[in-house]
Figure 1: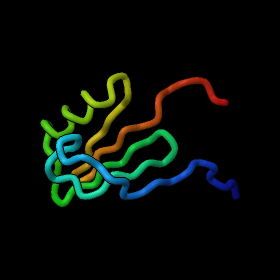
Figure 2: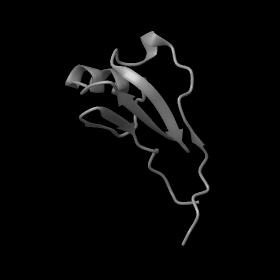
Figure 3: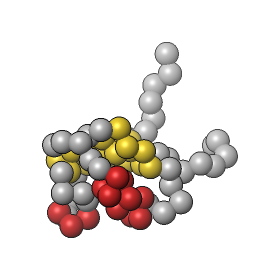
Figure 4: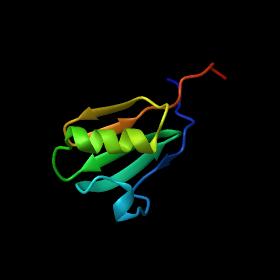
Length: 75
């Protein structure tokens, strides 16, 4: 079984104005970012995170917004 080599950073300090109001935790797995909410995020929250990460694929699944790693050649 392959081991993950990406560093996981959880619950880093964040500014209230930087994330949607329902944000309760922000975690990073390598260059991916996972924003967890205390309730379901809405399309406006998704749009705000997309503006923060231009050029990145950002998805919404209820109370989780994921900013996926940038696409590029495998290293």
